[in-house]
Image (tube, rainbow, N blue to C red; front, side, top):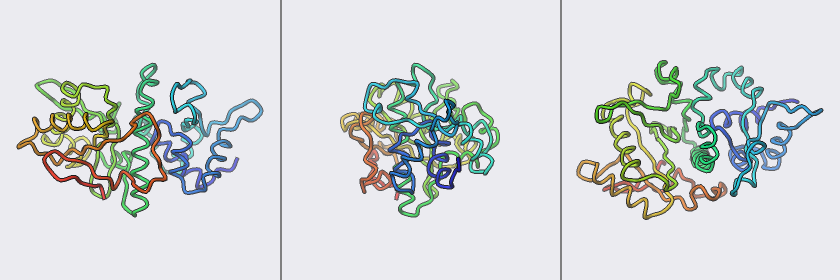
Length: 294
């Protein structure tokens, strides 16, 4: 099989950054006609003489889904594709690349439970990346950020687990996704309404504030500023989270956190054809005016 440049850039490269992507996600990300991308996904997975190639794998060959995700194939990068993009220098031939893929870091059975969450994280990040590409902005993935991070960070078992000390105890905070647009670095947190705001979300907010205030992100990632985006399932929960932030932040104001309601979070797919990309949707801030990424 002849592998084309578009196979590499439209399919293998995004799958090197995401643990799994659906057909619709890869079609939206790619620059070819949708029918061509769909056909290539089938060809790259094709079984010949009873032996499957290792360009792509399909997650739903092994897992039976019970929601809308069952309607689409989940594609994962295969060993042959991974070796190819490493040889071509597209991604480093190092363990930290696989260890930092968006989604898929949980093991069974929690991995199955988290799959809708991970699917949504990838959708939002891809939508932002496509929007940045449309506007000619410089989108930098977590791989780009980690390439510039200290060597000790890349050598860590989970490089995106940012260590810190809170109340005298060692802990960490790990974003669902990390990316940059031009010079602004963002951490994304997708909240599906299953965690306690007072005990879990508030502690996460405090942890993010601490890694910036104590310059931990300077030492760990080589960056000096971070904006944290919370995608939440409904307005009531968003207001409660912002109220909690108001109690934590000085003078009840914070420019570090942005909040946005994402309707149907985790229960239906994003409409990639919509002109209203996340990159220019307003994110609400506590005590300050909303902001957009572009």
